[in-house]
Length: 96
Image (cartoon, rainbow, N blue to C red):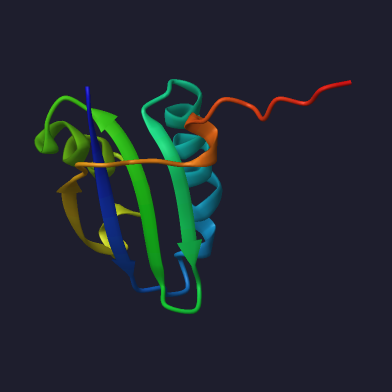
C-alpha cells in the first residue's frame, strides 16, 4: 500500500455548505476504513489536504471523485516518499 497526498483547492458557492455534511460522512467512512490517514482544511486559503492509502494514484483519484464536494475542486495527487507523524511513533515511556 502506498501513501498519496491530495492537495485540493476549492471554490464555495451557496450550495457548497449544504454538501459538507454528506462529504464529512464520506470522509469519516474512509477514515474508519483506514484509507484516509489525515484530513485537514483551511478556510483561509480554501485548501484541503488528504493523505490516502491506496495502491495507485488512479485509485486515490477514484475515491476523491465520489465526494459530494468534488465539483468544487481542482486538485493534484502526489505519491509520498516519506510520511511521519506522532501517530506512527511508539508512546513515550513513563517510569513510575
